[in-house]
Image: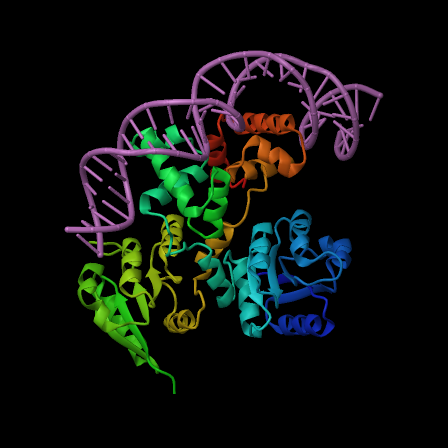
Length: 208
Length: 208
DNA sequence: CGGCCAATCACCCTATTGGGGGGATTTTGA
DNA sequence: TCAAAATCCCCCCAATAGGGTGATTGGCCG
């Protein structure tokens, strides 16, 4: 048989924390080695717990879950961090993932799914609630109703890559003046008058 | 009772195509209204099928799945597209999602999970196989072993936003010459000598 | 304690760039 | 056939970018 998966829970609500601990601990192959009510309390001894997977809440007293992620990563570089929270704000999700979380579950997730997700994350998967996944997928997609033409979008992309007009002209095999003309039209349509503002407008409206 | 979910399958392998059709059609609430062996054949009549969800393979004769997505989106703006493929290359995944796919499953997915995913995507979820989700999550994360200091990373981000030195100086409340100095160090460390090359190096190595 | 690196600021130089005007022509798609 | 898209052309000039060669102040680490 394989080794037990060592789990630490960091969750401020006592009921939920103990609920998780009992629930997961009952499952064959899973051991909850410790449970804390805050990152600040966990920081002192979590290294000795040597967890494989950390279940982490976002809303915590003191250091919040988002800030805790990089610090946990430094303390336990090989541990996987699984966010388990009621929060579904885009900002939280993307910050948590960017900070090094390996999965993101909302608290309405059924117990069996949580247990599965712990296994999945250990096996190199990236468990997410479907509503979270929807937001993540949406972040890859562009605005369909872009005011820009294909060519203009293409040139705006190159501007966002930091290229100069002449570089863009060379890369697209068109004249420098044509690039200029396109950029003027882009500025007109986006109502801006600089590269930086155009890039900002484009990112805000998912045009690139 | 709720309406039946109308499904179209586009898959070139006959065995798999018919397997899906039978399997999904058996499930209460799901109707496979049509199945095609290529997008090019589907294009002619898929509008009359009026599907809610399209199961789409990537590897198809003629127009491939990736290219088919935006065209399907134009023909059926309200249909959800669920990619169902053996391919797990990062390029395929990100292109498919960027083109408008709402989910991405690999073909080893159990039948029950496929049926669930159809329901999920209709309900506004974003079903993904866990291995796909892992790659998507990884795409949010930065390289930990960046050669750049915090300040340098911060300034490189602003450069990627298209800001000029003087804008950066104003935004960070530091002198123009300090910004210059940081940029010189960034160029040294990344072994480049222009904004465009620095941005490219940074994106390639996930420094920003 | 000495050395390293990050972060800050300084002044030299010049070619390139960017943005604001004013146009025109051809190609393409609905 | 008619509008939008894509192409190219000229004027102007301030701002910018990048190269060189420095200095100074901290903090951190062995």
